[in-house]
Image 1 (spheres, rainbow, N blue to C red):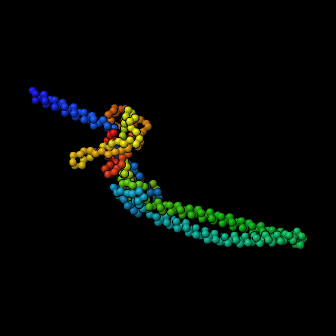
Image 2: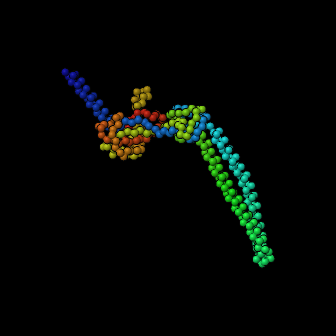
Image 3: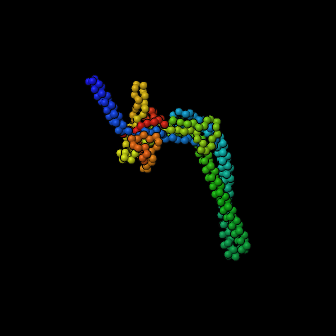
Length: 301
Protein backbone atom coordinates (compact mmCIF):
# COMPACT_ATOMS: atom_id res chain seq x y z
CA UNK A 1 0.00 0.00 0.00
CA UNK A 2 2.78 2.39 0.98
CA UNK A 3 4.67 1.55 -2.20
CA UNK A 4 1.57 2.33 -4.27
CA UNK A 5 1.17 5.68 -2.50
CA UNK A 6 4.85 6.54 -3.14
CA UNK A 7 4.50 5.67 -6.81
CA UNK A 8 1.34 7.78 -7.09
CA UNK A 9 2.99 10.81 -5.45
CA UNK A 10 6.05 10.42 -7.67
CA UNK A 11 3.84 10.20 -10.79
CA UNK A 12 1.89 13.34 -9.82
CA UNK A 13 5.15 15.21 -9.12
CA UNK A 14 6.53 14.28 -12.54
CA UNK A 15 3.33 15.43 -14.26
CA UNK A 16 3.29 18.75 -12.38
CA UNK A 17 6.99 19.32 -12.97
CA UNK A 18 6.68 18.61 -16.67
CA UNK A 19 3.65 20.86 -17.00
CA UNK A 20 5.39 23.65 -15.11
CA UNK A 21 8.51 23.42 -17.27
CA UNK A 22 6.46 23.43 -20.45
CA UNK A 23 4.60 26.54 -19.34
CA UNK A 24 7.85 28.21 -18.40
CA UNK A 25 9.46 27.28 -21.71
CA UNK A 26 6.56 28.55 -23.82
CA UNK A 27 5.94 31.85 -22.05
CA UNK A 28 8.34 33.64 -24.36
CA UNK A 29 7.02 32.14 -27.59
CA UNK A 30 5.74 34.78 -30.05
CA UNK A 31 5.06 32.89 -33.25
CA UNK A 32 6.31 30.80 -36.13
CA UNK A 33 7.74 32.17 -39.35
CA UNK A 34 9.47 31.23 -42.56
CA UNK A 35 12.81 32.78 -43.48
CA UNK A 36 12.77 35.09 -46.48
CA UNK A 37 15.47 37.11 -48.18
CA UNK A 38 15.88 40.14 -50.41
CA UNK A 39 15.97 38.94 -54.01
CA UNK A 40 17.26 40.62 -57.15
CA UNK A 41 16.12 39.71 -60.65
CA UNK A 42 19.13 40.34 -62.89
CA UNK A 43 17.77 41.14 -66.35
CA UNK A 44 19.09 42.26 -69.72
CA UNK A 45 18.45 45.85 -70.77
CA UNK A 46 19.64 45.34 -74.36
CA UNK A 47 18.93 42.79 -77.06
CA UNK A 48 21.51 40.29 -78.20
CA UNK A 49 22.96 36.82 -77.87
CA UNK A 50 24.39 35.66 -74.57
CA UNK A 51 28.09 34.97 -75.07
CA UNK A 52 28.68 33.88 -71.49
CA UNK A 53 26.58 33.04 -68.44
CA UNK A 54 29.29 32.71 -65.84
CA UNK A 55 27.35 31.51 -62.80
CA UNK A 56 25.22 28.50 -62.00
CA UNK A 57 22.61 27.96 -59.31
CA UNK A 58 24.18 27.91 -55.86
CA UNK A 59 27.21 29.98 -56.81
CA UNK A 60 28.16 32.89 -54.60
CA UNK A 61 28.49 36.32 -56.22
CA UNK A 62 29.99 39.61 -55.12
CA UNK A 63 28.49 43.04 -55.66
CA UNK A 64 29.67 44.32 -59.05
CA UNK A 65 30.99 40.94 -60.20
CA UNK A 66 30.62 40.17 -63.92
CA UNK A 67 28.01 37.40 -64.27
CA UNK A 68 26.98 37.48 -67.96
CA UNK A 69 28.05 38.98 -71.31
CA UNK A 70 25.83 39.87 -74.30
CA UNK A 71 27.25 40.12 -77.82
CA UNK A 72 28.32 43.71 -78.58
CA UNK A 73 29.14 43.37 -82.32
CA UNK A 74 26.04 45.14 -83.63
CA UNK A 75 26.43 47.97 -81.16
CA UNK A 76 30.10 48.45 -82.04
CA UNK A 77 29.25 48.53 -85.76
CA UNK A 78 26.50 51.08 -85.13
CA UNK A 79 28.95 53.20 -83.17
CA UNK A 80 31.48 53.07 -86.03
CA UNK A 81 28.78 54.12 -88.51
CA UNK A 82 27.85 57.13 -86.38
CA UNK A 83 31.53 58.05 -85.98
CA UNK A 84 31.95 57.94 -89.77
CA UNK A 85 29.05 60.39 -90.14
CA UNK A 86 30.68 62.67 -87.60
CA UNK A 87 33.98 62.57 -89.51
CA UNK A 88 32.19 63.45 -92.76
CA UNK A 89 30.35 66.38 -91.19
CA UNK A 90 33.54 67.64 -89.54
CA UNK A 91 35.22 67.74 -92.98
CA UNK A 92 32.29 69.79 -94.32
CA UNK A 93 32.55 71.94 -91.22
CA UNK A 94 36.16 72.84 -91.94
CA UNK A 95 35.27 73.75 -95.52
CA UNK A 96 32.41 75.91 -94.30
CA UNK A 97 34.71 77.74 -91.89
CA UNK A 98 36.96 78.63 -94.87
CA UNK A 99 33.92 79.94 -96.76
CA UNK A 100 32.92 82.04 -93.75
CA UNK A 101 36.39 83.58 -93.46
CA UNK A 102 36.42 84.37 -97.18
CA UNK A 103 32.87 85.77 -96.98
CA UNK A 104 33.85 87.99 -94.06
CA UNK A 105 36.78 89.36 -96.07
CA UNK A 106 34.49 89.99 -99.06
CA UNK A 107 31.98 91.74 -96.82
CA UNK A 108 34.64 93.94 -95.22
CA UNK A 109 36.04 94.87 -98.66
CA UNK A 110 32.58 95.63 -100.06
CA UNK A 111 31.81 97.81 -97.04
CA UNK A 112 35.03 99.83 -97.42
CA UNK A 113 34.45 100.33 -101.15
CA UNK A 114 30.83 101.31 -100.58
CA UNK A 115 31.79 103.91 -97.96
CA UNK A 116 34.43 105.42 -100.31
CA UNK A 117 32.09 105.59 -103.30
CA UNK A 118 29.18 106.83 -101.21
CA UNK A 119 31.28 109.77 -99.97
CA UNK A 120 32.31 110.68 -103.51
CA UNK A 121 28.75 110.27 -104.80
CA UNK A 122 27.44 112.65 -102.18
CA UNK A 123 29.99 115.22 -103.41
CA UNK A 124 28.91 114.63 -106.99
CA UNK A 125 32.28 113.20 -107.98
CA UNK A 126 30.79 109.81 -108.93
CA UNK A 127 27.39 108.74 -110.26
CA UNK A 128 24.92 107.38 -107.74
CA UNK A 129 24.45 104.29 -109.93
CA UNK A 130 27.95 103.12 -109.02
CA UNK A 131 27.15 103.58 -105.34
CA UNK A 132 23.92 101.57 -105.71
CA UNK A 133 25.79 98.72 -107.42
CA UNK A 134 28.27 98.55 -104.56
CA UNK A 135 25.39 98.57 -102.06
CA UNK A 136 23.90 95.55 -103.86
CA UNK A 137 27.25 93.77 -103.77
CA UNK A 138 27.59 94.50 -100.04
CA UNK A 139 24.08 93.19 -99.27
CA UNK A 140 24.76 90.01 -101.25
CA UNK A 141 28.02 89.38 -99.40
CA UNK A 142 26.26 89.87 -96.06
CA UNK A 143 23.48 87.42 -96.97
CA UNK A 144 25.98 84.77 -98.11
CA UNK A 145 27.95 85.20 -94.88
CA UNK A 146 24.77 84.86 -92.78
CA UNK A 147 23.77 81.70 -94.70
CA UNK A 148 27.21 80.14 -94.18
CA UNK A 149 27.13 80.97 -90.47
CA UNK A 150 23.69 79.36 -90.08
CA UNK A 151 24.91 76.29 -91.95
CA UNK A 152 27.89 76.13 -89.61
CA UNK A 153 25.61 76.19 -86.57
CA UNK A 154 23.43 73.48 -88.12
CA UNK A 155 26.46 71.25 -88.71
CA UNK A 156 27.60 71.78 -85.13
CA UNK A 157 24.14 70.76 -83.88
CA UNK A 158 24.23 67.62 -86.05
CA UNK A 159 27.62 66.67 -84.63
CA UNK A 160 26.30 67.23 -81.12
CA UNK A 161 23.34 64.92 -81.81
CA UNK A 162 25.57 62.23 -83.30
CA UNK A 163 27.91 62.41 -80.31
CA UNK A 164 24.91 61.78 -78.09
CA UNK A 165 24.26 58.63 -80.15
CA UNK A 166 27.89 57.62 -79.54
CA UNK A 167 27.33 58.03 -75.80
CA UNK A 168 24.13 55.97 -76.03
CA UNK A 169 25.99 53.21 -77.87
CA UNK A 170 28.74 53.26 -75.24
CA UNK A 171 26.10 53.01 -72.52
CA UNK A 172 24.44 50.06 -74.28
CA UNK A 173 27.78 48.35 -74.75
CA UNK A 174 28.41 48.80 -71.04
CA UNK A 175 24.98 47.23 -70.35
CA UNK A 176 26.11 44.13 -72.27
CA UNK A 177 28.46 43.36 -69.39
CA UNK A 178 25.94 42.33 -66.72
CA UNK A 179 27.10 42.61 -63.12
CA UNK A 180 25.70 41.37 -59.82
CA UNK A 181 23.72 44.08 -57.97
CA UNK A 182 24.62 42.70 -54.53
CA UNK A 183 26.51 40.05 -52.64
CA UNK A 184 24.46 36.86 -52.57
CA UNK A 185 23.75 33.42 -53.96
CA UNK A 186 22.38 32.55 -57.40
CA UNK A 187 19.04 30.95 -56.55
CA UNK A 188 17.75 30.61 -60.13
CA UNK A 189 19.45 30.67 -63.54
CA UNK A 190 16.94 31.47 -66.30
CA UNK A 191 19.08 31.57 -69.46
CA UNK A 192 22.04 29.71 -70.96
CA UNK A 193 24.89 30.67 -73.24
CA UNK A 194 23.86 31.12 -76.87
CA UNK A 195 20.28 32.17 -76.15
CA UNK A 196 18.97 35.48 -77.46
CA UNK A 197 17.63 37.88 -74.85
CA UNK A 198 15.82 41.19 -75.07
CA UNK A 199 15.26 44.13 -72.74
CA UNK A 200 13.68 42.90 -69.52
CA UNK A 201 14.58 39.24 -70.05
CA UNK A 202 15.56 37.74 -66.66
CA UNK A 203 18.91 35.95 -66.55
CA UNK A 204 19.41 35.27 -62.83
CA UNK A 205 17.66 35.54 -59.52
CA UNK A 206 20.12 36.41 -56.77
CA UNK A 207 19.20 36.27 -53.10
CA UNK A 208 21.02 38.32 -50.51
CA UNK A 209 22.12 35.90 -47.80
CA UNK A 210 24.11 38.00 -45.35
CA UNK A 211 20.90 39.33 -43.78
CA UNK A 212 17.55 37.53 -43.98
CA UNK A 213 14.08 38.31 -42.65
CA UNK A 214 11.22 36.47 -41.00
CA UNK A 215 7.62 37.68 -40.60
CA UNK A 216 5.48 36.51 -37.72
CA UNK A 217 2.11 37.56 -36.30
CA UNK A 218 1.22 38.79 -32.82
CA UNK A 219 -2.21 39.56 -31.32
CA UNK A 220 -3.04 43.09 -30.23
CA UNK A 221 -2.37 42.56 -26.49
CA UNK A 222 1.23 41.58 -27.24
CA UNK A 223 1.85 44.30 -29.84
CA UNK A 224 2.56 47.02 -27.26
CA UNK A 225 5.50 45.01 -25.92
CA UNK A 226 7.15 44.77 -29.37
CA UNK A 227 9.40 47.70 -30.27
CA UNK A 228 11.52 48.71 -33.24
CA UNK A 229 15.14 47.49 -33.00
CA UNK A 230 14.13 45.10 -30.20
CA UNK A 231 16.30 42.00 -30.11
CA UNK A 232 14.37 38.71 -30.20
CA UNK A 233 15.50 35.10 -30.23
CA UNK A 234 15.10 32.99 -33.34
CA UNK A 235 14.83 29.24 -32.74
CA UNK A 236 15.96 26.84 -35.47
CA UNK A 237 15.51 23.08 -35.62
CA UNK A 238 19.12 21.92 -35.59
CA UNK A 239 20.53 18.43 -35.24
CA UNK A 240 24.30 18.44 -34.80
CA UNK A 241 24.52 14.71 -34.17
CA UNK A 242 25.16 15.10 -30.45
CA UNK A 243 21.54 15.10 -29.32
CA UNK A 244 20.90 18.82 -29.70
CA UNK A 245 17.65 19.45 -31.55
CA UNK A 246 17.59 23.23 -31.64
CA UNK A 247 19.74 26.28 -31.95
CA UNK A 248 19.08 29.95 -31.21
CA UNK A 249 20.26 33.11 -32.92
CA UNK A 250 19.18 36.74 -32.64
CA UNK A 251 16.94 38.89 -34.80
CA UNK A 252 16.17 42.60 -34.67
CA UNK A 253 12.65 43.98 -35.16
CA UNK A 254 12.81 46.04 -38.35
CA UNK A 255 9.15 46.59 -39.22
CA UNK A 256 5.77 46.48 -37.50
CA UNK A 257 2.58 46.68 -39.51
CA UNK A 258 0.22 49.51 -38.59
CA UNK A 259 -2.79 47.58 -39.88
CA UNK A 260 -4.38 44.50 -38.34
CA UNK A 261 -5.26 41.48 -40.44
CA UNK A 262 -6.97 38.16 -39.94
CA UNK A 263 -4.82 35.32 -38.68
CA UNK A 264 -3.26 33.23 -41.47
CA UNK A 265 -4.19 29.55 -41.37
CA UNK A 266 -0.67 28.49 -40.43
CA UNK A 267 -0.21 30.96 -37.57
CA UNK A 268 0.83 29.52 -34.23
CA UNK A 269 -0.01 31.71 -31.25
CA UNK A 270 -1.40 31.18 -27.79
CA UNK A 271 -4.47 33.24 -28.70
CA UNK A 272 -7.55 32.43 -30.75
CA UNK A 273 -6.87 31.98 -34.46
CA UNK A 274 -9.94 34.02 -35.39
CA UNK A 275 -8.88 37.36 -33.91
CA UNK A 276 -6.96 40.12 -35.66
CA UNK A 277 -3.17 40.07 -35.54
CA UNK A 278 -0.32 42.36 -36.59
CA UNK A 279 2.60 41.38 -38.81
CA UNK A 280 6.08 41.93 -37.38
CA UNK A 281 9.35 41.48 -39.24
CA UNK A 282 12.75 40.64 -37.80
CA UNK A 283 16.09 40.95 -39.56
CA UNK A 284 18.51 38.12 -38.86
CA UNK A 285 22.23 38.24 -39.59
CA UNK A 286 23.25 35.00 -41.26
CA UNK A 287 26.67 34.88 -39.67
CA UNK A 288 27.40 31.17 -40.14
CA UNK A 289 25.26 30.60 -43.25
CA UNK A 290 22.85 28.41 -41.29
CA UNK A 291 19.72 30.25 -42.45
CA UNK A 292 18.15 29.60 -45.84
CA UNK A 293 15.12 31.01 -47.56
CA UNK A 294 12.08 28.86 -46.79
CA UNK A 295 13.49 27.55 -43.48
CA UNK A 296 10.81 27.38 -40.73
CA UNK A 297 11.79 29.14 -37.49
CA UNK A 298 10.21 30.22 -34.24
CA UNK A 299 10.41 33.69 -32.71
CA UNK A 300 10.91 34.00 -28.97
CA UNK A 301 11.42 36.83 -26.52
